[in-house]
Length: 193
Image (cartoon, rainbow, N blue to C red; front, side, top):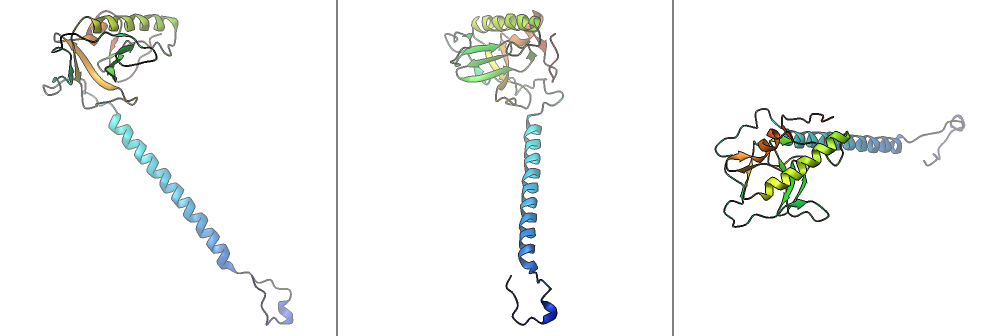
């Protein structure tokens, strides 16, 4: 602020203040706040939209005739790939009782839920999860099968392809359920302990 030259004696005790600089600072702070709030609101709406796209819908487990078309089929091949338990390299292997890799594509068996082996809640869950894992490996190695899409979701939130695995018209997931190694998927996880 520049002092005024034409001051009178009564102005010696008065300090003049230029409000323009202060208003510019306040407007700048206000613009930053509005920008941050707008970005936050956009982020929330975007995240909500992504969640809605990946949210399971009720009744999506029923298959229509167009959904029964195999996305990937090993039936026409002369030899099926050999599945092992997954290690460091994950190309064609079994992760757990409801997840496996097939030629570099991670697949989640969409019609079942099996006990966790990576973060089990109790020893019984781990033991049953290991049995389901080994049984899935054995089932996949028994011969040709089809991998079919289900419902209106292609992938889950972890990027796994949601598929039903079928051999001879029967779901391998249903076979694991009948053997007591899995549950039919209801849309949410149930405790195993």
